[in-house]
Amino acid sequence: MSTVSKAQNPEADPRVKAVFDDIRTTRKSDFINNMWLYLAFDPDLLEKTWAEVKAVMATPSALDPVVKEMLYIAVSVTNGCSYCAHSHTAAAKAKGMTKEEHADLMRVIALAGKTNQLATALQLPVDTAFDADTKPS
Image (tube, rainbow, N blue to C red; front, side, top):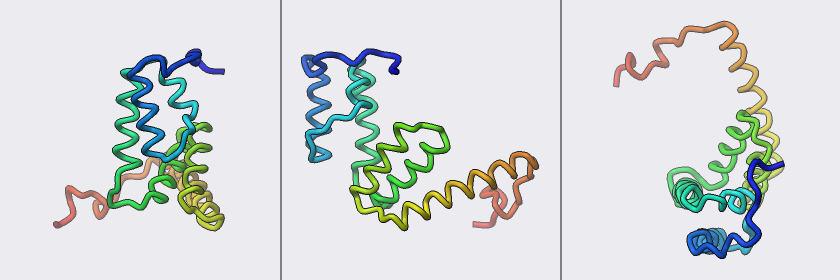
């Protein structure tokens, strides 16, 4: 269940239509997923969120697009966002993530969760060798 109602005709608002058109162009697809359909309840929030997503996820950068999606999956799993874990897994697969890479990603996520919990439970002090302020440049 959503906390807001999906608009019956969100593209009646020209700001929403402009964002949806940009999503279609950027993604080379007519599919507008629920994230955007539901965010359309607030055109300002929709515009700002899409601009950030486009800048980080759809703009070429030092990170490969599949790596970006895999990182998004890991953070989504950690944050417990089923919707994002599903949508970014689909995106990663569409961009070429293999079954083997997906399996490795699951192992890394599981291991990081375990060791993060152990480090937190033990309240480990950070080694000075890991502290950028104390390491020689």
